[in-house]
Image (cartoon, rainbow, N blue to C red; front, side, top):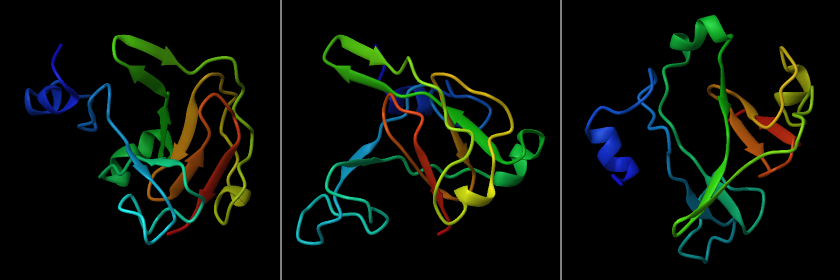
Length: 129
């Protein structure tokens, strides 16, 4: 099976240029650790997905994306399921922005913001940069 990077290089991406399976990087908020990332102000075990998206191209979607998590360990994979997304998120931006419609088993993320979510949970936080 081709890797995500090979999919991207071969043009097998969605309309935003994101492969159907986009990898994340493990981060920590510990500046002495090799996996430190300055955007991680949340704790030692957070995965980061940094995507370059032209937010204006999401005008029809009111500036949001919908994501679903998948964990792959060797040949075994697990998709997120069994949760309802909260109708409003916490955070410096999330408290002012309500989910435009009910959503199950997926994460609602706002373009141009720091979106924090938990695998298999509808809890969310949206912060300004």
